[in-house]
Image 1 (spheres, one colour):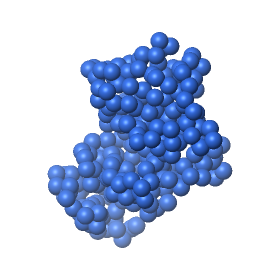
Image 2 (tube, one colour; image 1 turned 60 degrees about the vertical axis):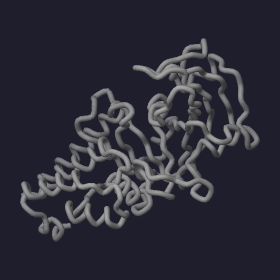
Image 3 (cartoon, helix red, strand yellow; image 1 turned 30 degrees about the vertical axis):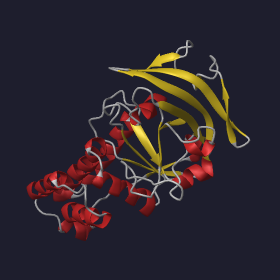
Image 4 (spheres, helix red, strand yellow; image 1 turned 30 degrees about the horizontal axis):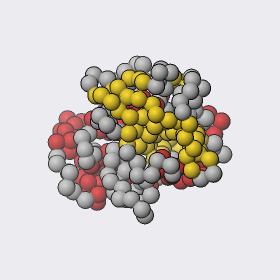
Length: 295
């Protein structure tokens, strides 16, 4: 690492490099070209994942799908199968390299699929029953809203980076600015997400990271998304239930109807009418009992 640090230019020149990289159009570039452009500019990318104890993993998390082909098939609510469906590049994956996109709040997952009037949105609840530590990497800006549930995690990450940069002398400013730069990429980069998707793929498929956390654009960074490697879902994930929603109107809020709540049984989703019990998801009231709600 010391040799890589010595290859860094002056801080002003380094910041100019980062700015030029941000402005560069890489939308048609190959993954190899994107990676080359990134490391030509940044030289080093010293992000360290956190090891989360299995005993600390137990919270529910949520995934949304819009207009799935076969709503009765439980596999429709997991990550896409690259052998059956074309997997497109999104924020945290490259083409044909699927990840499980979700959030720890149901409304965040709902908004991330950007539904329109008439769309059916299937909101699924999942749990993880891990028997080992999970390697988690956060790409979280330091200026996230303080009411974001991941705010304290982000603050602690930035404090750790600040402590580390103190030991790097003249290179500390480079690393601190690079950390902020990459975190903001995950919050702000526009589709087709050339830099952030490359970094996410390198983490999940290259560095054995199990999941990454980054701000939700749909929620203006007030909540976060979680992208999980398929191996974690295959080994530890369990589908709990699915809510079948119909979007009625989109204005300042989303107006929707809840038609059914389904549970995986015997390889199929068994649908039920909504009740007070099955619309209360771990203390989160999915919507009022009159079967209409707003997000």
